[in-house]
Image (cartoon, rainbow, N blue to C red; front, side, top):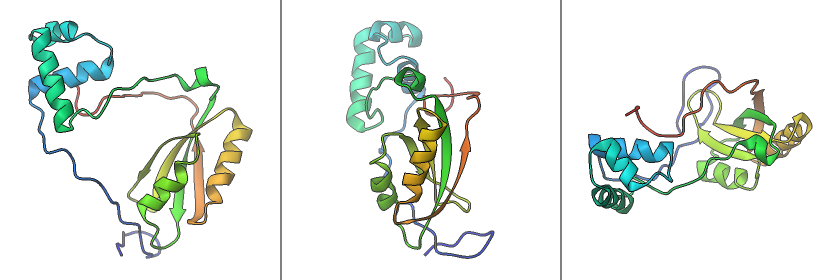
Length: 173
């Protein structure tokens, strides 16, 4: 059991992470990754012009980064409002003793409103990002999540206005 300072001492969950890929990006690879993070549909020729490589050289590097696990996939970003999700909030969850992160992940995966969830430091065991159609829908989701058998209590906040959202990982290119 792991104990963290502050507040009453109680057993905490242990984060279980998969090992990161055994690859280190050089400056050129980072610039390619940042270009793809901005727009995954960007052509290899366009990226090549940006970083000073030919399109085939960029493709080879992207293929290598995918094979090594540095690039795990390509996706699309959709404005939640376009899908009818007008309300965004974060829920801190506080779990019962010895709740494994995998149990939290499996429980939360059933909720389509959950956009992300992470184990965290501090008093909460995890923080969950939720999108809902409106305030009543958010309340219903909060009640369903709070009803999970491993959750002792929750604390939530609603987003008034998102100030900054970044989708790429790492420092700016």
